[in-house]
Image: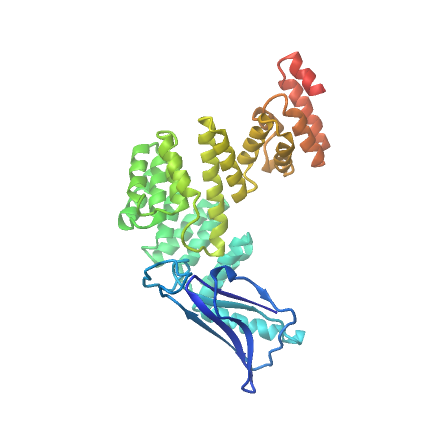
Length: 427
């Protein structure tokens, strides 16, 4: 049905073909002069028919020479296999459909057998299936997958960690702590499990005990990003800002390029040094040099969105209006549901007289479930009053929320402090 080739900048000759049972060759795809920008899903105009017993082959050739105009590093350097764009890889994804629908189950079983082998065994297959399901917000099914992994391998420490994280996210801290402890029992130096125990202790106000664990994990693993962030956050929780900033400073070169590190560092600096905070937020909004797996993209975008929003606030506090608007745009590009950014941009647009674009942001803001947006009072309090009232009422009306529009109008009249304001609202 379709085929998706993938390699990085050094890919040169891409060949995908099927060896047929009669000894013949059926070409599936040939790109003799590969360009990184050509990775994508190539769908056949007419599906190719491959008889049973065919073997699909791939042959990729790479060019790590100075003569390759797409080589990003001149002079060339040694390149290793990996997911980052400066590494190299070779893969192809193929979409197939059996001619006889009755063969679909056989195809699925063959695919599962391959997936189990690729994952490194059935326990790991269920573990990775759980991770995939979590990314789809299928938490109940993810939990079942982790439990199946543990049924097959009761010593699988990372599966206990995943179940603990799910329990923790649901507020079941005692259950989470027990699962983290189980993971440590099987793998004493497993960092996520030890950090998980410390997190739960902090939730239960056992700060001193949590601190001992975090200090130990960081001292043993100073190269681990999460160990650094958790210890710094611990000190911030205890209002020990200088200690936290010291830890961030130690990690600045070590974790350069990590959006989560730069964002955390920027937030810690906000109250003490706005210029340094801005520098960290600027680093946080940059895309990382390495290629991300699909599950990491969404969390990164949310961090970048929040960092851009903080940049916008800093700029607006300094009356750098254009820069502030630019970063609000960036924030909403990365996360269109960032409520604070939506409200802030609507405020700026209304102040500049652009009620048409402000209306679009306000519609996005109010066209949400009540528990996932701001109250009308909070919205009105953060918009130019009273000239924003008519635009807000129009947003409610265009979202089909007539009752909410009436309530917002009454609230605006209550908030008005002068006869002129009341007259403006009524008009």
